[in-house]
Picture (tube, rainbow over the protein chains, first blue to last red):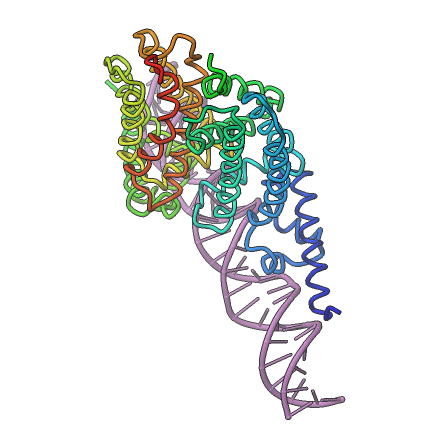
Length: 207
Length: 207
DNA sequence: AAAAAATATTGAACGTGTTCATTTTTTGAG
DNA sequence: CTCAAAAAATGAACACGTTCAATATTTTTT
């Protein structure tokens, strides 16, 4: 059984997290002031900082949850037996993009990316970068899986190809979150267009 | 002949720009306070804001100069007659990377990118994004040039390929500026490795 | 159960980018 | 030259994320 102190701690942690998430989604990340989050959670500003290193750190919980879930979804696709490179890529990347706005708004993504680039030495940035690398590795794994099943030519460097494709996926996602007008369908279509030539070139059934 | 007012304006503009550039490079972007910049330029803080919308806007002058120069360099490469896709790409991209630290430090790049993503509606971000697109288009142009000279296969979509390659170049540059340890040589080597499979696949002398 | 130690809470104060009402300077018409 | 209008300069005040010395609460020791 938890002591009184530990109970209170867990309770406050939860209340702060809930308050922050609610406010981020309701008024946006920038407009949600620490003072407001603290007040909604029923604690002081100082206490907020006892539970979270800073405002950006509050995002990471959410970003982390988001990416972990999408990585799981991605593994299922790698294990499926799609016989076409273009479809396999569109499938995996589609899952990434479809899932992306489940927990986070575009503004939250922008903030997360902005922090990750602007302050690379923070734990926030390091965690963010690590998640990115796991996603990149997953695309490489997809290529390897397709190659081992004879769908992709034997002479293709799966890591090089996977990194290239993922970096494009990532950069296009940046463009997507920068543009409030752009929708997921449009994003997928553009990336599919970019991937198509690659898919053709690496496929075993040479053109 | 300029009136007194216009003379003073031009002079102050110059002094503020010089002070900012000097301080950004000397103590870093974050550590350079507006108050310091204003003092070094011999104006008040308020006057600084009469000349520049905000601190981030001061970066854009430099970023802009940097990218304009590299775009010029790039055009020369497109017009040269390299007979090998890998070499042509390595050449163009190498110029981008070699030039990148001429006017800007890694920290300044990080700040510029961070601002561009975090506040996409600002003039700063819009200018930054426009420069990015011109670079992307240049890589597409290189592919088209190679294709018209028979170096690249006729059936390759130059825009799709160029965008893909450039987005990877850009994402790798982000990794580069995030990592103070990484040098330009290492960056080039990694990107060359990523591009190699593509270069082979799109080349007319099929493997 | 009292005292001491450990831990948690608090909000006022700080730093820095930005704003804006006020003051100063410049201009050009009469 | 004078002076009213236009333009520019100013710095105090503001906003908000963050820190930290002081206070309060909980746990452990005796």
